[in-house]
Image 1: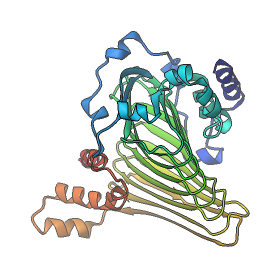
Image 2: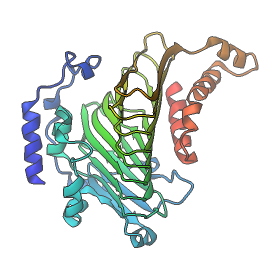
Image 3: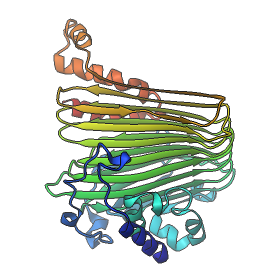
Amino acid sequence: MLDRRLAAWDVYASLPMPTTSDEPWRRTNLRRFKPDNIGPSLNGTADAAVASVPDYLAAQLTEDKTGGLLVQVDGITQSYELSEELQSQGIIFCDMHVAVRDHAELVQKWFMTEGVPATDGKFAALHGAFWRGGTFLYVPKGVKAAAPMHSALWSANGKTFTHTLVVLEEGAEATFIDEYGSAESGSDALHVGAIELLVRDNASLMYASLQDFGTNMWQFNHERGRVGRDARLDWVTSAMGTRLLKAFQTVELDGQGSWARMSGLFFADGRQHFDLDTQQNHNAPDTVSDLLYKGALRDKSRSVWQGMIKALPGSQRIDGFQANRNLLLDKDARADSIPGLEIEADDVACTHASTVGKIDEEEVFYLMSRGIPRETAVQMVVEGFFDPLMQRIPFAGVRAHIAERIIEKVG
């Protein structure tokens, strides 16, 4: 692992900081990002184990009782439990440091090899050099996890580099919720993360990432899912916090008959800036991808969504769909929506769509004419806007948690 860290640092040092001259960063300017003001990453502190963590962060979010729960502060494990039933199934669920120590042969095989290599970009390399904490989930061949698993990260000192590595062997099934949060602070904070979701042939993963960092956080993430033959990946992303978020989210449909659904929800206010760069790569025939991202924006916030569906030569009979819908609640809010297709096969069904619009005053007036106060009417319209996406989330607890934050943000 030390060798990998040093190699990643060499990659980081060789790459310039992204600028608006680089196509993926054309609409996201880092001129106010001053990493030297944030300081170096530290391997946690002694008080991380007893730091106060909000109750909501690790609350039960699924109807089925959570079988594995991991709570970390600054990458240091504060509490951990794994049911005997999951252990008896041979499932490994632990923090990444324990995984490196106790399951070296598995980590060596998959850590930043197939999912997010350090060469993916400046911040992927920085993560590879300084990562600490995070979660390792391994489900053996043919095992259907008897209960969901849940990890929660709380950033206290303002510098986190957590890594999520999920591996489902052939025919395995699992549900995993990955949660992130931090308190508000007057000083800049940094999170550089990586998420690797490796779903082998005939396997099925339900994965939800819920981010609610403080608005002083700069977040840079590289995330990739790989889906094998006749396998399924249902991937949910919710983003509410950070000062600036730049995330590269890619799904690779590697095997014939593979299926992936990406559902993204974000709500920006103040001067928050969210930039989500999604890629749906159809690398095999008879594959299906379905992406729906919805965002609401208030005040002077801004969002950027750049999406691409790519079909390689020979990837015939694919079905790719992507849509991004944006709701502007104030005149100074702005959303840029840029869908794209790159098709190198001739027997495909690929569709993309994007919309940016203001709140419908007729809908608000209709509700107010029934005696509903304007503030409540606006909340109802916004909730209705998000409802089609919320219906794609199979957990009532997750839907309720997100809905509560939406109402808070609507104000």
